[in-house]
Length: 137
Image (cartoon, rainbow, N blue to C red):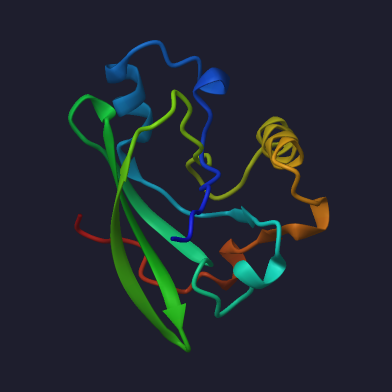
């Protein structure tokens, strides 16, 4: 089984204190800006882990998270829906929006470093994202 850590947002950074706060922060449209991996081949253009996120929904009590994203196969974008289950107290998710500000980028890079991923293995992928911008979850 292939496991992927999606770098999205950390609860301690957001100061989320309740399930409802978490749901409000997670639910809604998302766009992948950066990806990081220990092996670049995993996230290079055309690889199956180069994901272009569009929507995330927090299930009941946020014990499940519904992830909607595209993966490009050639020039075509294939939409996927994945259900994740909470196993730890920390969710990793990327900031909403088109750009990370300096503070968010520093937090992202610190997290990448803590995970043992080299800085050169971080890719800005939003520049290659030409998949549909809106979906109906």
